[in-house]
Every structure is written in C-alpha cells, then in structure tokens.
Amino acid sequence: MFLGEFTHKLDSKNRIMMPSEFRENLIDEIFITKGPESSLIIYIKEEFEKQSARLNDLSNENKKNRAIKRLFFSSTIKTSLDKQGRILLNKNLRDYAHIEDEAMIIGNNLTIEIWDVKQWQKYINEVEVNLSDIMDE
Image 1 (spheres, rainbow, N blue to C red):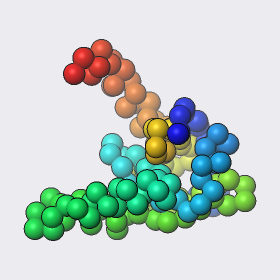
Image 2 (image 1 turned 120 degrees about the horizontal axis):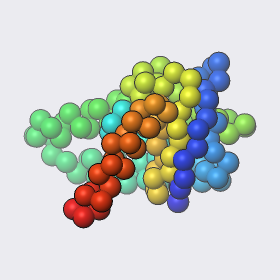
Image 3 (image 1 turned 180 degrees about the vertical axis):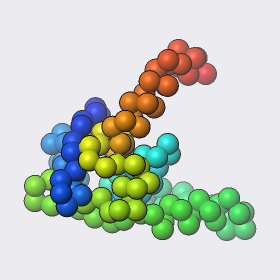
Image 4 (image 1 turned 60 degrees about the horizontal axis):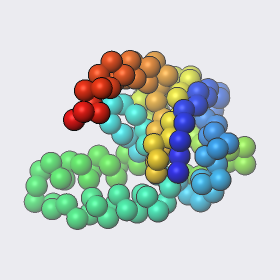
C-alpha cells in the first residue's frame, strides 16, 4: 500500500528518488505510464499485469478502446530502482507531466503518482474547495 506525499527534485540526469517508505514494495521491475490530469502513474508488476488484462479485455472494434490501449502501452516504460532508490524519467514522460526540476510523489493505495509540484498544488486547490460536494456524490 502506498500512502502520503513527498517532494523530490530531479537530479542532473533526470532521475528522481523514490520515498524510502515506498522502496520496499518496488524491489522488482516497475512500470511508469501517463496518467490523468498530466500525472504519471507507477505500477508494480502485479498491478500492471492486472491493468493490462483489463485493457486486453476491451474490444478492438471500438475506436476509443483502441486509442486507450495504444496510449497506455506506447507511453509505458519498464524500469527498476537503481541502487540509490532512484528511477529515470524519460523526456516523453517528463514533458507530458510538465516536470522540470521538482516533483510531488504521492501514494494512491496500489499505485504511485508523480506530479509536477505546481500542477499538484493547482489540482489540490481545485479539489479541496469542492471536497464536501465530491464526497457527497
């Protein structure tokens, strides 16, 4: 389970440190892909396989389904933590998430999300204003 939020800087080689609280669950290969609201999503292998199976169940005869599959699989990278607990974010993923030098890493139960700090703050400010309405729905 991944919980909490952590701010980390990218180093000069575009690597970002994963929070120590998350590292014990990231010992195998991990998968990073584009997520909603310009975020990046990190899946552990088991969760990536579940997501892949769900997407494989979508019919290829539907145009939206084909687009979702293409976007998900073409933008996903398979990687692992280096010895210092860092991951490399390629240019495509950094550009998508607007991450330049500092990122917010958040636990979202079974996945991890990476956000540009400013994008995260903007998102949180919008959501927290409407939190009561969202919870009522």
